[in-house]
Image (cartoon, rainbow, N blue to C red; front, side, top):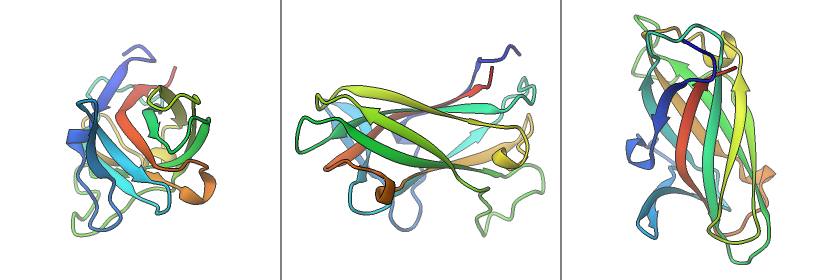
Length: 165
C-alpha cells in the first residue's frame, strides 16, 4: 500500500457510545454530527478493521469538526485520540485497554458553521496499541474541555485514518 492511502473512515452514525459522558448524536442542517459539550469531557468510540494492505507505517488521524458556538470568534478544541487493539486473543472484551492518548488540536474559523480538519500522527507500535494488518481495533476520541476554549458544542463530522506518509 502506498503511504497516505485511506485505511478507515468513520462517520457519526458509526459511534459506539461509552456508558458515561458520551458525545451526543445531532444534526446540523441535516448533516449528522456528534456534539461534544464545552463544559464536560465527552467521548465517542468507533470499531474498525485494519485493512490487510496496511504496511505498518503508522497512521495519521484526521478529525473534521465545526463548532456550534455562542459567538463568531475563532475557537480552539483539544481532542484526545487513543487506540485499543482487539486483534486475535489480544483484548478481553469485558474491559477496556486503550493505549495512552495523543493530542489533536483544532482551531475553527470565526464563522460559526465552517469546518476545520485537524490531524495527529501515531507511530506504529505502542502509540497504536500495536494494531496489525487484519485486526479489529477501537479508536476513542475524547474532547478535553480543560484545554479547549469553545462555548456551545464541538461537532465531529468525520474521523479518517490514513497510513502516515
